[in-house]
Amino acid sequence: MADGYRLKTRNLILATGLHTSSLMETIDNEELRREIPTTYFAKGSYFTQSGKVPFSHLIYPLPETAGLGIHLTLDMAGGARFGPDVEWIDSINYKMDPGKQNTFCNSIRRYWPGLADNTLQPGYAGIRPKIVSQGAPSGDFKIYHKILNNKAHLLAFFGIESPGLTSSLYLGKIITRTVC
Ligand SMILES: Cc1cc2nc3c(=O)[nH]c(=O)nc-3n(C[C@H](O)[C@H](O)[C@H](O)COP(=O)(O)OP(=O)(O)OC[C@H]3O[C@@H](n4cnc5c(N)ncnc54)[C@H](O)[C@@H]3O)c2cc1C
Image (cartoon, rainbow, N blue to C red):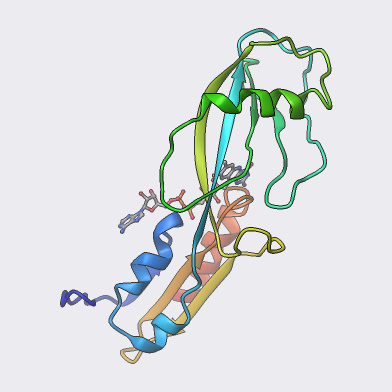
């Protein structure tokens, strides 16, 4: 590693979400470093609704450039959450901005005009690891595979944003097929 630390392993799998690019940079190998995509951060915030919503299904508006749009998801208890939006950030922070309430209301009212004022509360935020920058067309996942000098497999997963969770079993299969 760049800090002098030596790691002896048969295979190295970097599946560290937001940190895969920075972690791979710590490997002391110029050739590898040249192939690391930049990871950009796109925060997605959710607001929740205090009252009951008159829907029993999810609602997806037309997608935006870098996300699915502020859609409605229902949890197992019938609670409603709206989101996520897309906010490009320079460093990782999960702070919610309550001031986004108006922007959220305007988006939601396009498919639910009856949304009452002041009924949304800040919920939570997540961060997408994107390997395309703001304004660029959506990218795909990048799965980097290299067999190193000592025959060890290096697999690194970049840009595993939505639908990363949905794809997780298949991504796992790629790992087992490659290294087992
Ligand atoms: C707002 C939002 C909405 C989403 N919606 C959907 C959706 O509807 N459907 C869908 O399929 N996907 C969705 N996703 C995407 C999904 O959440 C991700 O694709 C998935 O969580 C990625 O999994 P991962 O294991 O690659 O990374 P992560 O879940 O980020 O896990 C990486 C792990 O690596 C650990 N780690 C990091 N650095 C190190 C280190 N140096 N050493 C050891 N461990 C380390 C972290 O602690 C973490 O536990 C959404 C994501 C966001 C942000």
